[in-house]
Amino acid sequence: MRILIVGGTWFLGRSVAQEALELGWQVTTFNRGRSGADVPSVEAVRGDRTNPVDLARLAAAGPWDAVIDTSSAALAPRDVLAGATALEGVAGRYVYVSTVNAYRGWPSDPLTEESELLDGPPDADEAYGRLPEGWDGPDWYYGRQKAGAERATLAAFGDERVAILRPGVILGPGEYVGRLPWWLRRAERGGTIVAPGSPARSIQPVDVRDVARFALAQATATVGGAYNVVAPVGRETMGGFLQACLKVTGERGLLEWVPDDVLVAHGVEQWTELPLWRTHAGVWTIDSTRAQTAGLVCRPLAETVEATWAWLHRGGVPVQHPRWDEHGLSEEKERQILNALEKQGASAFEDGVR
Image 1 (cartoon, helix red, strand yellow):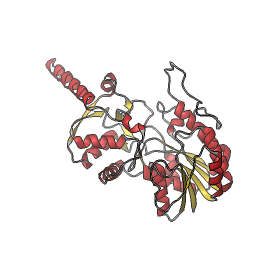
Image 2 (spheres, helix red, strand yellow):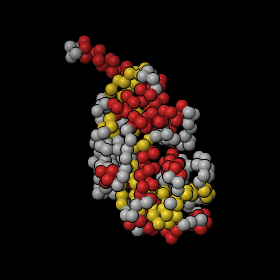
Image 3 (cartoon, one colour):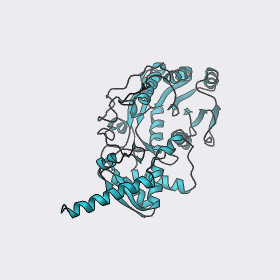
Image 4 (spheres, helix red, strand yellow):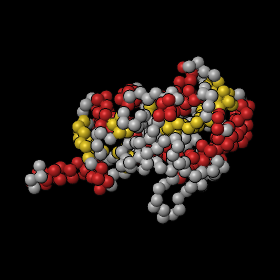
């Protein structure tokens, strides 16, 4: 099996390359070579996927059985279209890693693969979907861009030769966003920890290695389709996740579960200041039955936590990315919330409430 990975040095792309090499596949990667190191034993082709000359040179290095595109998060649909068009004649299949953000209903509504996608034409530029000044509705810019990019791959390769993967939150060794690493470092610091909402809340993160293996499985499939690549609904909980973080870091912390409304009242930024916390009803109600039927296997979240902690302790350093600094609650804000809870509890006791 001969595959081309567009990307291949960061988080998911790197994991795809490593898993493919372990299977004995021939792996070519295409990237600019500006961040992240190549996985040993891959054939690296340098270039910019927005440059027609570089795309033509890449196509000349083919053919491949499949392309796995892991690196188009900030790429306009028209650039994805140009790249896919350049590769259509030298690749059998196209596996495109999209996102659940492409759905109009995310994060408010439960989702299946039949849920409505956002608008976004396959030839849209990077300005398509930007919000007008003063807009106070949903921010659909990223989702519109990704929905357009999905349509771009289909326009170039056709329905039967394209597999579209829509992950939610991907965690695991090499994570550059900073969600799980922040929780691990917070657990390591110990003391009383603000835990968001309810410990019973279902969450659906997926391990990067499981996404990689599913992408490789789709590279060998004979039919096209779209798949929600998330853990099964209800299997994992916020409580289980945070307990796993405490366990691997030495059980130095105590979780203080703070109701959603209290966190909202203190202005805690959902999704970032307390990573994985979001109050929208549909954020963790994404059906992945189709992907499981097609071979997706999601390991227990506790294993992802353990592997990420081991990676950090081995000196693992993620590729630098601005999103890392967006994540985490400051010590000062955490103290304010805990102090407010303590005062509220004391007042309730004095009033005979408890």
